[in-house]
Image (cartoon, rainbow, N blue to C red; front, side, top):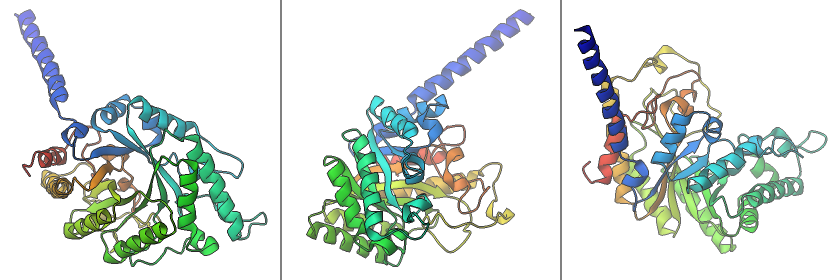
Length: 376
C-alpha cells in the first residue's frame, strides 16, 4: 500500500515538473510579441555578461533582441587610468550580443558621471585646458569606438548634458571645453565608425524646457553638418509620473525631426518619493527610513496591480507610436539587479521591472504582453 502511495506521489511530482516546464515554454517572449513594432532589450551587468548566472542568461536570450552595457563601457570601467584600458568585460558584452544576433548599444562615451577625476586634470592636478580635454576625448572615442567598429551597432555618444529647465549642465566638459563639446563628441564618434548609429541620451525629456533644448541641439548639429541619428528617452519613471501626454509630445517632437526615438533605461519605481525630484540624477543620496522602504519582504498584490496598470498604460502609448519608436530597453533584467534598490536611498527594496527576483514574470509582464495584442 505504501509503495502504491509513493508511486502516486512520484507520478504527481513528475507531472508537476512537466507542467511547469510546459508553461515556461509557452510563456511568450517579449521580443516576439513586439516583433514588427520595436526591439525590446535590457542592460546587462558584469555577471550577466560573463554568464555567471545561467538562469539570467537564459532570460536575456529568450526575451530580448537588443542589449546595452550597463557599466562595462563607461569611462571609469573601460579607461580607468591615462594609459590603461580594460576591455575584458566590454569584449565579452559585444561577443555575447554577436553570438545571439542582438542589436548592440554602447553606453556611454561622454558623461559627467562615472568619469575618472584625472580626465579633467592636468599633470599638476589642476584643471585641464580645453585642448588637453578635447584631445583626451578624441583619443578615448577613437580607441573605444574604433575597437568595436562594425560590431557595436549604436552608441550613446553624449549622456545627460541638459538640465530639467533646458540649460546646459555645468559639467567639467562644459566648463573646460565650452558648449561645442557635444558637437565634437559626435564628430569624433562618427569618424571612428561611420556606420554606427549615434544617439543623445537623457532623462526627464518629457519636460518642455529640456525637450526644446534637445530640438535646438539637433538643429545646431545638423547646421554644422554633424550627424545625429536618434534620441534616447530614459524611462526612469514612477507610478504617478510623468504624465504620459508629455511623454507622447516628446516622442512626436523628436520623430518629427526625422530622428529615431528610443525608450532607454526603462523601470518604474513603486516606492515613495525621497524628494521632489524626478529623473535620474545619480548624485542624489538620502537616508534610509522605514517609510521610504515599505515593502522589504515582498510587494503586496495591490501594488502589483498598480504596477501592472502603469506598465499597461506606458506600453499602450509605445504601441500607439510604434512607427516612431525603434527600441524599448529596460534598465536591467529583473528586480534583484535593478539600480533602483539603492538609488536614491541605499538599501531599499524596489520592484521596478517585469521579472521578479527569481526571474519569474510578474503581473506587469502579462499586462505588457496584452498591449501588443491591443487588449489593454
